[in-house]
Image (tube, rainbow, N blue to C red):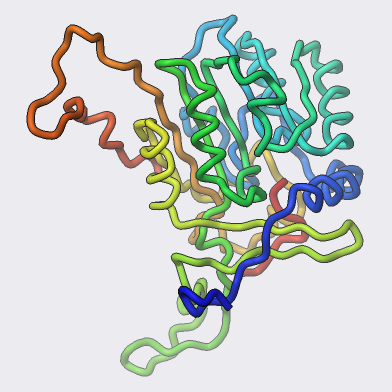
Length: 314
């Protein structure tokens, strides 16, 4: 127990566990998942960027850094379809081997780096800056995602972008189906099915102990992600919690057979933040608060809006 909160202590998410798990899982994961590189994906069974339109409009030659790239489908998409100069990082050597093969097959010039997300500044170069720093379903495997977001913000150029998709806290609840009654005591049938989450602010971890090893995935409240972005000096420009679609760029048989759950409960939350340049020195700051006047964009705008699948997000 945590003596300060009387809550059970959470397991520490260890980089070595994640590396070993994904090295072992990589061949099987490649067989059971289908992730296209003709669209930018944000997570399993949800629309890609062709539908969500979240990617910033960057010119060819702009730079992008992907953290937790897995098979690097998103970096391949950005290099081939958008003409960006891409760097992709992952802790798993096995995943990077598959990523290099995919990039070579697509004719994509991508720089690959093996390192944990937590150490990416030293791995790619602490002074390098990128127009886009992005991560799709990797930060839930990090012990301190707030620190990761701060590092991502530092790695973005002034005026650059940070794009993160991660597991939605509701998805770590338990999907319940059964015979339910409405408030008048009448049979509510399947309309009573839904998610049970005992603590939204501290969702249960997704702990994996199987033939591939041990790994932990952790969800956080949406407000925590919003605060981490703002604390890192990013304005939240878009926030999305998309429902499932049939023609998703990232899918598998198990994800596709979600039984309608992902039509009603989001599996993924997506945040797009921008690192605004500092105001020129000859422009005075707002009086009273000692800070710059907050624009409408920096206040953020809302964007578009268990039964566990056989495999979960990398």
